[in-house]
Length: 614
Image 1 (spheres, rainbow, N blue to C red):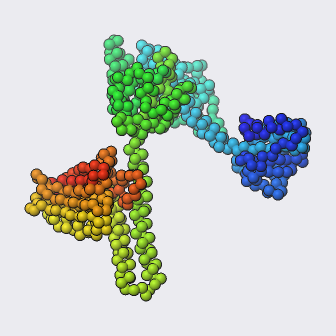
Image 2: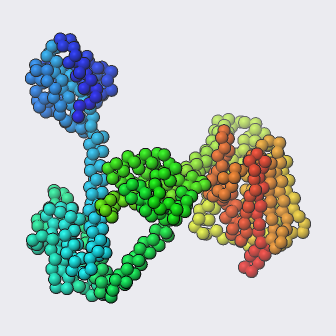
């Protein structure tokens, strides 16, 4: 195929007889001008870069292209002909077009790198080969199933199936099928037993009744190719033998047409049960995209009842315009597709991968489609949260390390620094080191939680002392933002058995989180009081609040609420740790929030939790 730029320049030269052909020095594609002796007179920058040519002295064409003689440059220039051929230069595959210009005694070579297209062609050939193999296997299985359903006797089934066997193998022209059942033989063609064969035993009701065989009349393998039989062909042969055995066993057990209808009904019910129990959405459509079957998972994704969708246009039910375009484009040639992105979901959008497969010769020769929709919303969200977590942890580690490194350099560079300044530097370094230790402890705690190795050291817990400790630890943080921080403890409180260190982490994380998301001049209020047979730890603020759609996910690990134009430090682990620590204490945590009006977190801990173990 001639490249468009080459064709354009050639057309221009044809319209300007007697004039010099234009030399496109600015072309993004390599262009070279050669004379009758095979010397390269000119080369544009793209050609210099591609073939390592010198701008002042490009050299000979044979130095770039060892088999340049194939072009017959003098003859091409003299006749004004055009020659196109492909060659490998410097590890790349190039399409070269030589156009002769007799009037100026030179020719121009236009080069186009076709290596990516060769790789793409090779990959597509592999995909096409795999698809064709699957289609052949599917046709064999479908023909087997049809024979079992239509034919009345095992002999009729074997006659039909043995003719299907050669077509399902890689080299059908050399394949021969054979079925031996109860001493009778059925062959696809004049049979020849060779050393290139495979066999599978037909088992019916626990006894060997015969075998299914496929032989090649000769060794069909190409050089370096595995085989001659593929593992998939071995599996298919086993499946055919197993299915034949099951069919024969069923025929032996069938006494009349009512028993046959009952078995078919059971098979259909089993298929429907499998479809209905699948977590992925499955829909079967006919050649006119009408819904033949839809499972409940697919109905949930569309927000529709599956039974109401039968017979309707499937594309009319799909809200994703881009997916409808892909469906129509591939449907024109009855093609399949895999992992096409589609947005579904009702009422909330869900991200799905759609995979469609064709089933040919359904009913009156129609082609049906089975499309599976896999909901990957959660996986994509987890991937995004992990990315955010890595970025957040990197930032949280880099900030204190940078601060510590800076102060250490200052102290080392100025050993006679004033004592009060030295003390200030060391104090800051100590605080930053504490931040690093706290972050590392959080990460280690997450690892222990996920591995189930977190153990509680239970005992009587003084919640009022925990409250005082939390206030003392975080007062300076609140004062830095000019916040009013108070925690009120009801007296007396029911006796709580638990892990004081873990409960302190819960209270500390809730208060710290409230301070972080409350603007300057606001307030953070804590309360600890008894309720029924337990204790409630409540932390409220008048901060930015949490959107409704995020309130169900804020306790997930790595999750952080993203707000436009707002950058808040943190790793997204604080509330996850709160939830897990409360769960270990047999309690629960709840949140109430309105955007712009603050949030209230409540932790419920049973008063007698752990009393028995103590």
